[in-house]
Image (cartoon, rainbow, N blue to C red; front, top):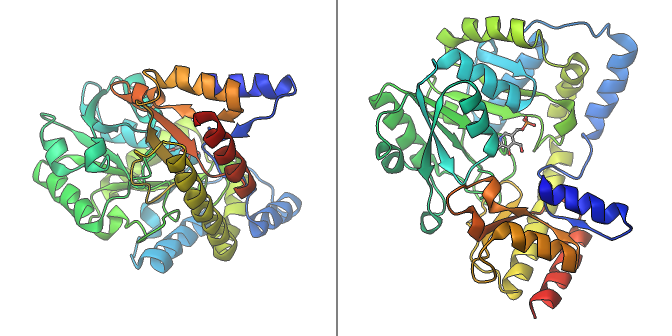
Length: 365
Ligand SMILES: Cc1ncc(COP(=O)(O)O)c(C=O)c1O
């Protein structure tokens, strides 16, 4: 946030900024979604929906799992939420009691840790290692002592790490053997560059899968997500949702129905990310940043900058001041080793990647 503030100040003072710090698509919602939103504005009352979401949208999400993953997910187990952020809150509240221990990876998305601690839960940090591709494994979780839950993202932010199906299955078995809850953050599903990421729902109906319209569907500001919960959590989640949110945004729900007609447009965005990823990784490598996490998904490169600087925050500040390229210091994602890493986002325009690479090469000469 500090880098974004500095980047905005620089832009306001007339300086040019290349925004590689952003964590969201640079595209608007796909055309059918915008059209559906216009139609819903004209024809729908747009009052509250049922707390679990519009039944037609829950059906459509179930259809998405059938088409894209070949998995049958009963619509009754799908809960429409206010972004995945709303889903985390509901899932943690429904599944855990204060004082319980939930493991999360470091580096990882900072929201997990903050929501867990706000709810009086203990966030147990799993030190994911660079030389293990920042993967969370059953062994890593097994070394963390007694746990009540394990939350893993695949593809992950900030590393782009994707879990192979056999690793996912190993986590499912690990959680079952210990009678603990496994939660998968699948928000970057659809944005992968090799094999598609597998859903945990293929291996388990005991795990919680959390997803969102924010990333692949390019709808961050529409604040819409969903989760699939085990049957016994459905009623607690429904009661919590009724009281905390009443319902997710109704206009967004009607519009999101059309998101499942937009695969071609959305896959076009992913093709651009793939091109950007090639340009940025090659360019950064030439500029001397060669120690990336294996970014098989999402739209981030997480680079080790320890050969250039001892403090990634200071490094980002200097890089912005001297080149106009904004990126995110790793300390946002990792209190332990984040001073050695910087996250570059390639969700932007290809022309911006080309220009950023040119400037960084000149800078590091
Ligand atoms: C890994 C991960 N999970 C969850 C979120 C929250 O997204 P939203 O609430 O828009 O679904 C983000 C946002 O950047 C993220 O990177």
